[in-house]
Amino acid sequence: MVTASPSIQPNYDRAAWAKGYRSLEQEQDYWIDAIDGEIPAGLTGTLFRNGPGKFEAGTESVQHPFDGDGMICAITFKEGRAHFKNRYVQTEGYVAEKKAEKILYRGVFGTARSGGWLKNAFDTKLKNIANTQVIYWGGKLLALWEAAEPHRLNPATLETIGLENFDGKLKRGGAFAAHPWIDPNGPDGEPCLVNFSIEAGLSFTLNLYELNLKGEIVRQQDHVLPGFAFIHDFAITPNYYIFFQNPVKFNPLPFVLGSKGAGECLEFEPEKPTKMLVIARSGQSKPQVLEAKAGFVFHHSNAFERDGKVVVDSICYEQLPTVEPGSDFRSTDFATLKPGQLWRFELDLATSQVDRTLLVSRCCEFPVVHPNFVGQDYTYTYMGAGIATVGNVPLQAIAKINVTTGEELLHSCAPDGFINEPVFVPGSVDGDEDQGWILTMVYDGISDRSSIVVLDAKKMTQVTRLWLKHHVPYGLHGTFTSEVFI
Ligand code: CO
Image (spheres, rainbow, N blue to C red):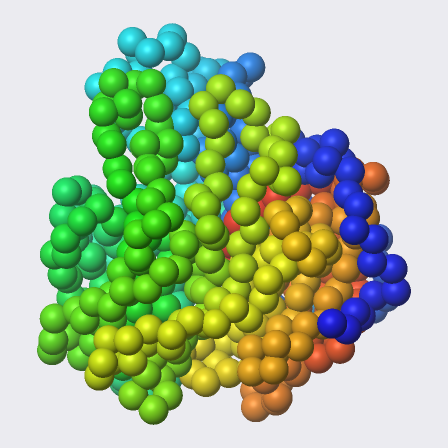
């Protein structure tokens, strides 16, 4: 292992980490003036980030951070300066709960309405919290949450415009997953956005969507498949969509009766294989189902085709991380959880054989690749990583992994910094795969402020650090567009 920062200290302060899960109530709008180093002249565009920003309604707290209200941050890079703005997505639930100063909706991850068991029994209405991803595509800024419709926002002001259903083309319920990919070489010879949705039940329906540059759904297909599906992310290649159907059982009774959130009724079956669904993008064949032991998967790094095989790199957990009912997520004991680890799966479509190799054993999450290499044979993935080489720990570094050689290059923000997902911004149109910048938001538990760190993606050294005037709670996903809206 090679390290790009001078001091790597394995210790972290859990109390400092937990402060990053406080709500940020205030909506801000300012030019950033506390800057270490210089913003690169070629860095122009907007980093949009989404994540739970508010964890209470009145004095009542959510049970799990994933139940927090979606808050969008926009960091604009323009002519060597940077601007920060954050706004809450004005979802129906956010507006109603803010007014009522109490929790009115049940959360997927166990948040209960005030009033106890009776108030929650048989109330299966969920709150579309719009808190997972935000993407600018086809002239629309969309805040995504996997179980419901996207919210469309004004990219300049972050004001909420309303729900988006793409001219009525979203299927029943209008769900649109939080993990779209942009295929740099779509079937029409131009980039397209690829996404899915799931209608869950005893069997499930998988809906697939491809959108052109104008933001119109131009290709779609759906498949009814057996079993219960909890699928958060997927992978694409030029010819296939790939889904990992995690081995989970769903017992809806405690959810229907109001004693647990839907997400708490999942039972992970670690001894069972993961079903790997390979679906032709041409829509001309039934899904091929392969099986292999993979643990639980939230996120994939990338996939590509090579010699009749589909290669998929994914972050796998031996156990599903859960929050026990009644416990406080801010006092998570990292040591009791299993780490996410990066594995490579080689799916032989002719024989249905799957081979797997461990690529990264240290704790890691939120992998990203250069946007031109999505679905293509590639060399580098960047992800949040732990400092300790074994076990589950908070993410305090950005790791650059050579997926061919296994070589790691770490940029550490330890001991005070806790990182969010990295985003890759290419340095030029046709540069090397690792020519560009890595942008991430880092929470500093000592100064209680967040910053945007810009790294040189080749060397993993810090180019600049932009200090915000406040903290930003740990977020989920974000995207970069070269467009500037201010
Ligand atoms: Co995700």
